[in-house]
Length: 150
Image (cartoon, rainbow, N blue to C red):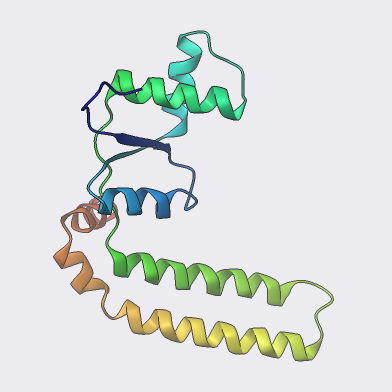
């Protein structure tokens, strides 16, 4: 428990997109939110002899890690690129459904139209990518990493 009057912070394990909405909501409300690599928390626990894996034990371990390590605040991703990624992910998922065995021609055609729509939306957003990157320091840094590899 935080001391009386101490600001309340949040620490989550980085486990894909599941916690992104929670982290974004809390960060937007002005809270300190840290999103940490799960391996860091796991190995910090193992160093202290904590090996059991229950939800309650994991929550306690994350809280202790956050209190001890004081991880830096997580910068929420810019809204527009997140929407673009979501559309791309939906299109990829639909392509997988279309390729599944046992689909009728009518179902495949319906999925094809859905994929075409989602890809069209993604293409429209893709045209805005350079603007998003130019406007967001974190994205500029992320873009520079692969471009720096010979």
